[in-house]
Structures are given as C-alpha cells and as structure tokens.
Amino acid sequence: MTGFLDTYGQEEARRERRIRRWVGGIVAALLVGFLGYWYFHDFREKRQVALFLRLVAEKKYEDAYRLWGCDPARPCRDYNMEKFLEDWGPKSPYGDVARAHVRRSRSCEDGVIQILQFPQGNEVFLYVDRKDRHISYSPFGYCVDASGRNVNLIDIFFR
Image (tube, rainbow, N blue to C red; front, side):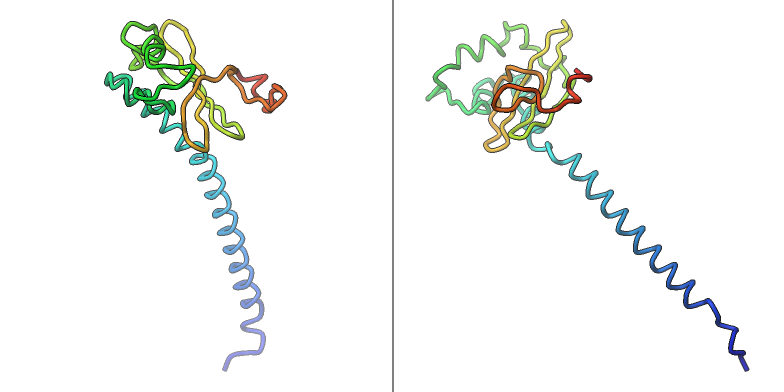
C-alpha cells in the first residue's frame, strides 16, 4: 500500500516542467518570428536588384530597363533608353556588374537602398520602391524623411 506522502511534490514538479516548456516554446517561437521578419523583410527588394544585375550581366538591357518602370517603347521622361545604356551599357564604368557586389543594404520606410561597390572603388546607390518594386537611383546612401534628415541614427556611425 502506498503511503499518503509518497507522491508528495510530483504534481508540482510536473506543473513546473510544463510551465518551463511552454515559456521556452513561446520564447523560441518569438525568436524565430523575429529572425524571419528581419531576414525576409527586404527579400523582394533585394531580389529585384539581383535580377537587375543579372539582366545587365546577360546584356538584356531592355528587360533591365523595364525594372526601372520604363519601357523602350514608352521611355521615362527623364531617363530614356540611351541614358540607361550610357549608365549601364557595355561602354559604361558600371557595365561589368559581374564584378560588383552589394556592400550594404539599408531598409527605409518606403523602400530599400542597396549600395553597389565596383572594383574601381565606385559606389552606386540603388533604391527599390516597396509599392511597385521599381528601381531608381538614390540621391543619398542613407534613409531620409520628407525634410531630408537622416532617420536611421545608426547610419551616422556605419557608412
């Protein structure tokens, strides 16, 4: 016959293990969710720049021009196909994109700035809009608000 105090404390130990597992599972789920958000937040915009670089490397300039929201049949007002080829064509200093790499990526409120670095030391700031994923040049290498102020203070220290 079992004594009255033989099972004393076993239920509390089970409950303690159960609570510890629940808290650990919730913390792990929150950590995985945060890391997933951090990794995939700019995924589509980064992939758009990678596609642009691949198209320029393959010399498919018309398709690369379309990623800027322009079309060779209906070119953009301030950035026609001739200007695009001047910037990214075979005779441009940025035409050899196979040797370029993304040095830095900055996530802004309305888009993503990717800083391309070329072997000569030249840098190009490309901006990808979040709404339509069109590529353009960024006048700044950091995120700015409507008044032109830097909104990410950490960019002051890590250029």
